[in-house]
Amino acid sequence: MAKQKYYVVWEGRKKGIYTSWNECKLNTEGIKGAKYKAFLSKAEAEAAYQLGWKHFYQSKSGIRNNIHNNKKHEFIAESISVDAACSGNPGLMEYQGVYTKTGQKLFHYGPIIGTNNIGEFLAIIHGLSYLKERNLSIPIYSDSQTAIKWVKMKKANTSLAITKDTEKVWDLIKRGEQWLKKNTYTNKILKWETEWWGENKADFGRK
Image (cartoon, rainbow, N blue to C red; front, side, top):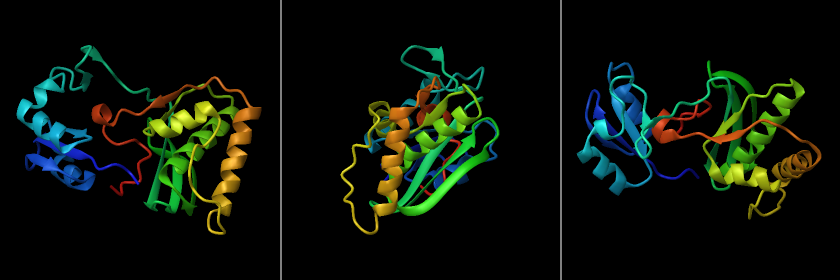
């Protein structure tokens, strides 16, 4: 299950701190000059709300920046973004990959019984296979640090029990692990920085 996030809206229809992306979106979408940002804890969000948006935005360019090193930090548009959604933990899980620049859906799988991290793991492997088949060297973005780590380990470090309901996803996990062991790739797997860029371009919008 995805971690609870807190969304600070400094400039929008209604300022405040919201606990869902939909509320944040309703108060910022279509608003020229809207300023908002996601945080992983209520305390961080409250502190950020008091500090104001200028601490988190580069006002002249409109591009959110890394305030720690004051360098512009932009995502690579020529890339694939992947994301998973899961109703319960475990529960019905699905994943998809999109072309980051346009949001065009490139692949989708599910729903089947699984977990969010497993979905993210499988989505990255699906993306790597998709790019390898087409001889493309562009990177893949995922907002799951856990899944990225699993891919680098070539193993899904999940505690999901093998049952009749999870047989299908476990078959996919084993096939994915075998693919990683048998194939090489040059594509970078990058962390999607939600607090700079907003929700992952492949996000299912169910937060």
